[in-house]
Length: 382
Ligand code: ATP
Image 1 (cartoon, protein in one colour):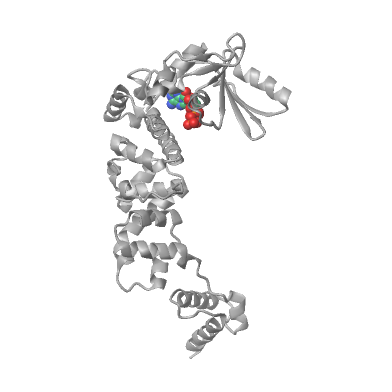
Image 2: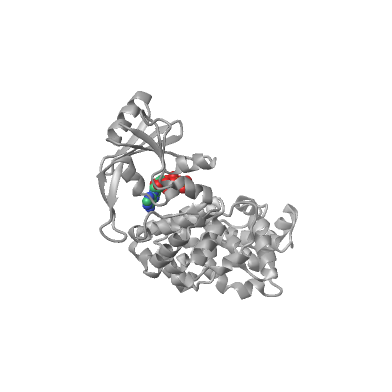
């Protein structure tokens, strides 16, 4: 069976970049080949006969094998009709020219670069180019992929490709893709090396507005301070929700059928926005600040820290993230019981009072905590 290395690894090899996974295509039955190879290597193999694909796992490495195939789309967003085909047909069904190259791995084509769509020329010029005008209509997830590769590789969208992309957005093509697939694409974008850049580009191209109208062009992300560390995907999910009201936040959650962790940061961020005046109020005690933020996801607080224009709020959120959230009384429940606090809810109440006193700096030592605990007890008894 003629065997080829295809797509990402070929592109990355030509660019001198490393690739995580190896994608292989055979002109023949990939599942049969994968099963035999896995037997020889005593490796694990997962096959999907229906799709003609298989994954071999060897030493933490994945080897994806697919049967070369020909695809046609009956309507936008529909799953393509797939039939076995030649390597050339397989390359033509792909998203961009730079992803449509193959390297022969078996004789007589060992070492031969197959580049029927002039991908190398686009690699040299730094262009992301689709194969045909209807590409984004066939599969609108390619819109996200285009932005992702463009930003990752510091390339440009080839002008016609950009026009097709904008047209597909104007025609509402994102609506032809399921919420789960859209969320997966957004998640991949957020996991890139430079996710903020990709998000802002998606905003400028109108991708985010098309995803959920109130996101507009996400211009607020421009004030997101660029730190050297990579921003966590969840922080960016929260940041996207910055201009949204709590109701819009709920609609955004449904639009992408968000899993609970994503939904939680969106909810937290929109609720924190409602509390912005309280967070910036003069004379806010450390314990009141703590209780405003307590239990909210760290990702949402970090996002607000990046986005709030108020220096006072910034300072308070930093104080919470770096210090206040770690504050605990030294005394534990059992210590309070041995000091005479009765078992039951009273222990929790006294612990909370000790924590507030710690937060406000009214107690700093174990001794002072014990004195305060006894005072609370006396107050109750008196
Ligand atoms: P990376 O994993 O580094 O983002 P990759 O090129 O390996 O890049 P995959 O998402 O693993 O990306 O896809 C493998 C290949 O499959 C791509 O190179 C491309 O040729 C093809 N491909 C993936 N998604 C699509 C799509 N939506 N439409 C057409 N071809 C696609």
